Image 1 (tube, rainbow, N blue to C red):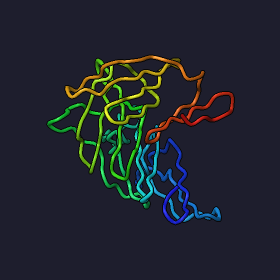
Image 2 (cartoon, rainbow, N blue to C red):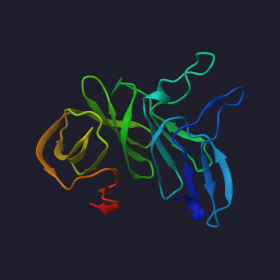
Image 3 (cartoon, rainbow, N blue to C red):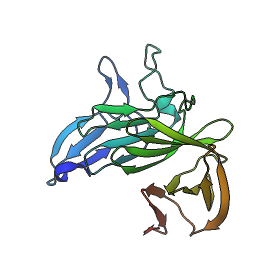
Length: 212
């Protein structure tokens, strides 16, 4: 949802067409189902979350981040982006003195306020969890797992949901030296689709959805 009872729908994929560039893959509808506008949010969207003030956050998987156009020019996808409700970019991730890693493939996004987002992306030799606040990278942690599909954090705790064919959940402590301390492993239920937002994870199981 966006402001004024508008609804945003987006396709994960788009394509490059000369000379316009990437085709629009996001459409905004009013409450009567009438299309209001279209725009481009980039190719290979992995997750999309919106905020109550009308901002849009997106992250991407590897094909879009490493893709180039017909002239072998890299397309402007940086792994994590924030947009306004008209598709104008407000922020994108950039490495800085705190963390030099480039986002090449990301699975899990959790937006917990208007300008605060957490992203977990695959890195070498581990995954990396970053926190962006006020359009700036403010902290990161090394995560000894790959392909995490959902996570949530509160205070200094982090809950990680599995990876490929992994239905376990791991509770960890966020430490000040950019590492985690694993404290507990458990299962909630056999799960398929998982997505986290704020302090909750939504789990699909046998065509039913549970909010944990």
